[in-house]
Image (cartoon, rainbow, N blue to C red; front, side, top):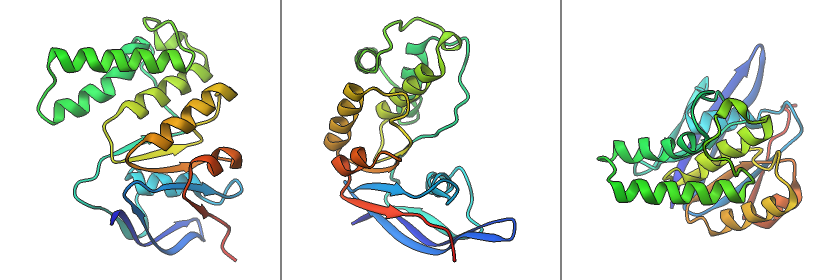
Length: 205
């Protein structure tokens, strides 16, 4: 069963249609890689699916209130917030919308966040976000996204700033993730190891 449907979506930039009447779906548990040269609209497609950008025509329909977690390429970070607080706050806010979190939930979220940050090479959990390098901030954003309760993970270039061992860990994490995954990456080796389907985005002719 499709958990998300893209229905007759078109997108215009200037006088050029980068998408023209696209219709497709994402099934439960499906792992989809998106490939294409720069400028063909891969990131725009992710934004439309995630609901952060509107198509000019058509619509994206989530089934049964499916929840999305979206890792973008560009982030705005709370410079004075600690790394741990930043990573945990995403999951806490989602759980809070479902009816609040108790002390046990908070302890579990914090333990999972610390473990994932350590795996991603960020060991100073009380450091302020503003003191991190660009690569460390991206890894913190990856941890925050992966910990969000979700049915569909949408990841835009998640392997940037990761070494080989951490990329291997991410591969195994995504293989074991029970929900659907939609990922843009230029690393075809990475995609071949996790994806069940490839979508190629190309220029209109």
